[in-house]
Length: 191
Length: 191
DNA sequence: AAAAACCGAATGAACATTCAATCGTCTAAA
DNA sequence: TTTAGACGATTGAATGTTCATTCGGTTTTT
Image (cartoon, chains in turn brown, purple, blue, green):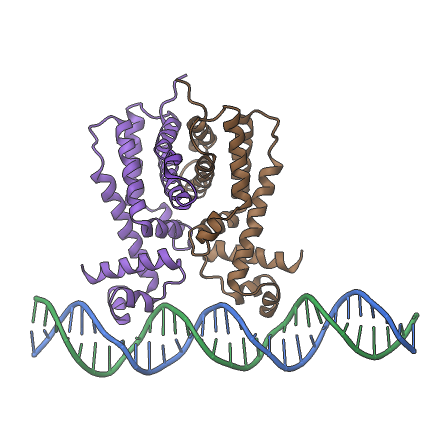
């Protein structure tokens, strides 16, 4: 593994465990088995490290989504594959979920980045456009909105698992039901 | 306004604008027109300030939810009132939304707090229990899950507004449609 | 006149960043 | 095949700054 990835990985772990604050460069250095100075050889400064980490993570999301999508399937199948693949990924990579959630609510996520073309947003947009185009999705809702709502539902579902896994018996959670719930909301409504 | 609320308000604003980091006590003091020492008269330390702020904010959510609920209505109406009232509140109090989102993904939100009885969670739970009891909601899904999913949808919707308000013409957003989308997902499914 | 609330300069710890020195590897002349 | 030297990568101690917190003294409230 190259140094940059070591640093990314250590930063993600640190943020997962100690929050966006609570990850001093000295700790990043120690946890990635690298000297403090080395980090500054690869990154301009801490902000730059965070920003590059964001793009690194976004790319991972795209990879997962692509690997689990088959555009020749009907859209409901594609949706279910997407939903469960992303959920499984976030469950496995809790640090990624934590990082993204914190990043999106931090000053790093500027208007600039929000509105500039973002590969992940573009992927999501084009995915849901497919569903709209072939008439399997509720009409009259913009793909961007579907994307955010669906992605939000995945994150929420991941959190349900974390939060309630101790309190509530897993069988009682009806977790599989959540994807259906979302699908019933966004599918073409028959009237 | 008492000093404590001044401090809460300044902290919320600071976190909205500069993130969870980026709100040093010196700034909190300045923005709330209070001396640094005074903060420590009201709060044990910074962590304590954040924790008390959390409970303060939670109470605000409960107040908004209560003020807009009429248990004698049918559940669909109650749901729509709830959804739109909470959304309007978060839209107006962006700092609250930012604070909560960051808090829930920070180390402050310990297992302890997650599992301990939380007045806001209890409110949500009992609200959705009503809907389940009278058969207007999809059967077989726990109220806690409905609560998290619905609340997540509100937050997502608020974010859609922030992010896309500049890029996309508001009329095209079909924002009213989102609550319907969520309702169609959680309502009793006819088969 | 006692107690409570408030002030803000002072303190010390934690932090991001720098930089002079060292290491490893590659190139090319001998 | 050896060797000089060059250049990028790496190191970690040193630096200066920012920050949370303290505390002796002042003002306000009871």
